Image 1 (tube, chains in turn orange, purple):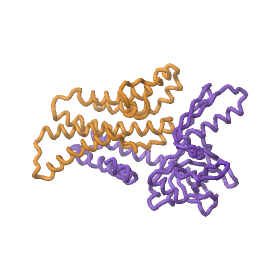
Image 2 (cartoon, rainbow over the protein chains, first blue to last red):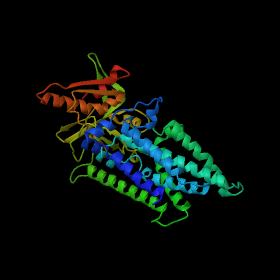
Image 3 (cartoon, rainbow over the protein chains, first blue to last red):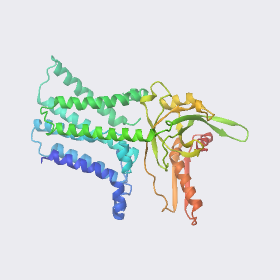
Image 4 (cartoon, one colour):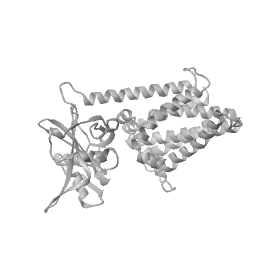
Length: 177
Length: 244
């Protein structure tokens, strides 16, 4: 198995872990005291970006997800071509839980996940997919010259300008209404 | 973009789902390998299968909740909230009570919410469903009724205000579709002091907890549990949202 396949398995595990928090807390009192305290974040307004709460478990989960993606995007990448391939693959893997949408209510309800937490998970996945999509576009564009005299070249230019705009919109303005 | 999202939220949300499907199709066309058992197509295939499975689960759950043999469908009435003082009764302008007579009863619990759709509210409301906390429930001669407190915003909730009434009359009833209930009740029995916080309409989610805690308090022999509710309000008249 290569690193992306390990990541796909780990992501599945992370989603299960996220949903199984309530069961974990019931099983072990020690884990409850380890995971439940609130984390003091020195950066003002950071809990807004964490999304659901600043409980240690939630912060660890978000950090683990971001670090996992960063490692998979960099480890073993030797040239631009492999970066293009790796970012595209990671983007597709993250699309799996993202495609479930933020209304995973039946599952969230069974495993006692809060409505806001479920929505935040969707937002984080969406942001990372967009970021990896951007890396993919940037790497692909840097490895080939864009001919603006044909439709394909114009389309690539338009996408490479639009995606950063959408990404900025999602991350800075917030996806919530 | 943010302005468009706020102004046309419902259209934006549906467009978001369509574009997500377009994205999956575009990735399929874009990828060099089309083998469904190899990466990256296998991941797209898994995403589609999960989507179908969750969608089917939700659809089945909604059918079960709304249709019962020889029972009418869920019916909703939108009732005006009145702020009562010694001198006069003033209708509250920015919130209503939605009473839904459910066809298939369940035992409502604190912390539960449902997605509510009322197709008769506006021409586009049949494609809209919004989450609301169950604020309280009661039983009358015709069956079980659950009540939601709905604050006036734009779109669906604004349209609801055109159907407000003070009479509980069958002519004012509209068909309602309920998806849920979702959410689980927190077990607060073991805590000595319970602090509940709410801002404005947020009290809708806390009311069932207050009711349940008070019931337990009155039924229990040990009266050593302390309950404090902190409710932030813009004006005193908003208190009437919680009257029942």
